[in-house]
Length: 284
Image 1: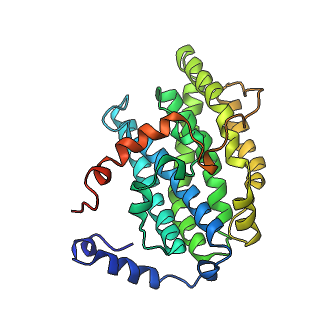
Image 2: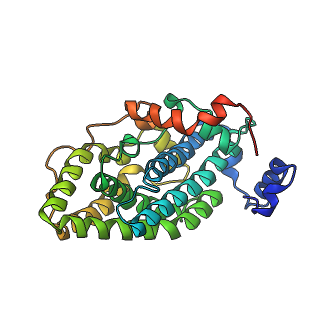
């Protein structure tokens, strides 16, 4: 991405193209047969971080304590930064004249490819932290695997994002333990959050044709390959937090990766996309 001083220059798009041209050569970007699946997979990565980042940002100015308010805002900014990288690469792969901003602000809900877990309402701090932990535990494993991606561009993004996501999972797991093994009230809230969110977590590990195509190309691991490591992390944290792991299926709610979402995503996008929808092409 261009540096902040560069963003004040008249032709920002030219700077972005120059920056892209300086990246390592990646043959996957020119693979016509792979393009639809690669584009869709990149949107999944970017949409997950965009929607979760937006959800977490809703706590800005409303956190229970100042330290946590700032930590949540920083986490949201990290995720939005990851979104810019994933959707920026998606736009390059698509090669249809769209930008990361176009993909974020001008797609309807049915075109979004995030898992349903990240679009669920915050409800309270317990739900916010438990949702973040379940996602973080997956996110850190995915990015770690992507360091070995056959796509140099994907591996580069993963390396940058992993530095921040390592902190995310450390922070969210620590808070799950502190609140789960805290007071009777905090324990009850964390258990309720886990019970409500658990049926959504499994979608992270469900594969389809898109996942199979990028795995075959050596770009990303098959989703199911990450499950064992995720379960080890989750089981260890829940045990220390004295929280009971739900016995029911954890993949009841699915379809977000294919564009089937809960009603909540529409409300998020109505807020997030308002400016570009009301004033098309508006810029600073």
